[in-house]
Amino acid sequence: MYDIKPLEEEWKRYQRKKRRPWYILTAIAVLVIITLLAVLEYGKTDLLALFSKNSIEKTVSLPSSLPIEKSLTEEENQSNVPVSVPQANNTSVAVVANQNGSIEIVEELPIEEKSLQPKQPVVKEEPAVEEKPRKKMHLNIIETSSVSAYKDVAERFSQSHEIDDSLFLAKAYYRKGNYKKAEYWAFQTNKINENIEESWLIFAKSKVKQGKRNEAIRVLTAYAKRSKSQQAKHLLEKIKQGRL
Amino acid sequence: MKSRYADAKNVFIDSVDIDDYIELDSSTFAYRQLEHSMDKPLKMILLFGKPGTGKSILLNRIHKKLKHQKEIYYFDTPAVSEKEFFHKLFKVLTKKNLPGNTEVNFSALVDFCKDLRGKREIIILLDEAQMYGAEMMEKIRLLSDSRAVKFVVSLHKTDDEDLIAKEHFQSRIWEVIELKNATKEDQTNYIHKKLLKKNLFEIANSVKEKHMKLIHLFTKGNYRECNKLLFTIFEICEYYDTNEPSKINYENLPQRIIEMAALKLGYIHV
Image 1 (cartoon, helix red, strand yellow):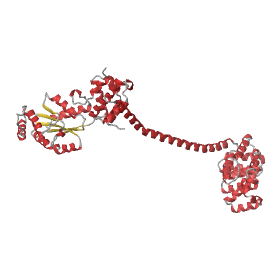
Image 2 (image 1 turned 180 degrees about the horizontal axis):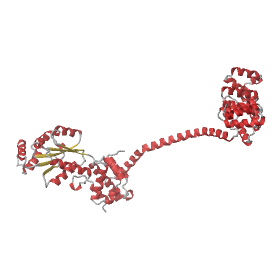
Image 3 (image 1 turned 90 degrees about the horizontal axis):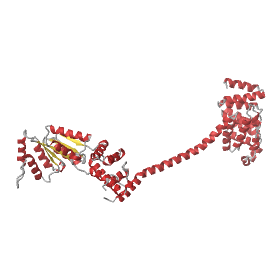
Image 4 (image 1 turned 180 degrees about the vertical axis):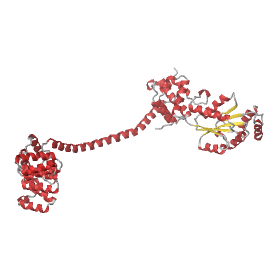
């Protein structure tokens, strides 16, 4: 009988060698899974952010107002306009709370003005701009209609909350076909002054252009009921008949 | 006390003993093919295949079966010299011993064979014919031309031996029978039948399909290699059965033991 022990040892070494590729494969698989999970987790955060925006949009009776505000808020942040997301949340909460078809709620948000005011770090860099008469600049912008001019007006609005600026931007963006921004600026105008008819009409038309016909009808119906505006009624008919 | 695996181990001692012959589909087919070829008026029949494919045991079996019906002789080991070979042949043909201090005259032997034509039909089974030199094979061919002596030549199948076959037999051999390695099914039957022949039912039952697959993988279906591997497997089992019974499963042969045997025989390496 030969010695079995060395053979057993040899077999153990053989087993280890046989399993080595599996260990390597398992390690690679684990690494791949971890990487995938990490990637998915990162992607999920983004998705969640998007999802939360969408869900807010769904719960609001005037759904377009919040997402637009939010998305534009992001854009404005990029261009150093300090409009905060919490402000948008405040708006949405207020809107939901008064969900009864009335649009008056939109104007119950003077808080935003307050919340916006402390956030003026950009202004500090350009103190001279503040001193300039804004109407002049307004005219210049109309002439140039350059992207930077729009930004300047938006920046100025963030500080002054002049409805001329916001209405100008709403009209200008509507003309350019940027209905999302047009809606946002019309909404900003309405928040400051709910009686500017032109702003309501742009707001409604921008919504229709973005495919939110029902929302537009709801908003415009409420406004027309409140203001008895013939133009609003006329536009409402056009939207209902699909002629816009 | 003698281990149950001792008998199992001995079953796989490699031999050409006809009692160990196992009827398999492939071997039965080869046997019938050879028997049929021998009935034909052929001068030479070439039986070839790799070592361990069952050539010797086939020749053995055919010799044992036909020796009472035909004049058939089995030359199991090649003669060391030409002289010795012709001594053997002389004895077969003349049924007499060569007188002392004499040598066979080849021409006279050929003439003698020619005289036998029609009177006797002699079949000579030459195993391990690759051991004969080219000159010797040529003489065998001349003897077969007499039509009184028929040779069944068994050759290992290697490149060189294929060459021998081509050079010396191609034009003269009328029938070629090739033996191949066993299929997994044949090898499974072979192992089970061998064990059952010795009434080792439990052990045969402990060798499962997955073990057969592994054994076939290691041995590539070669019967000689299979015998070697099974012998080693049961030798290891015998050791465990006697010394460390906890390391063996009597109902299911541990794969570890097959791999250990394969390591020992060099089929696998660390």
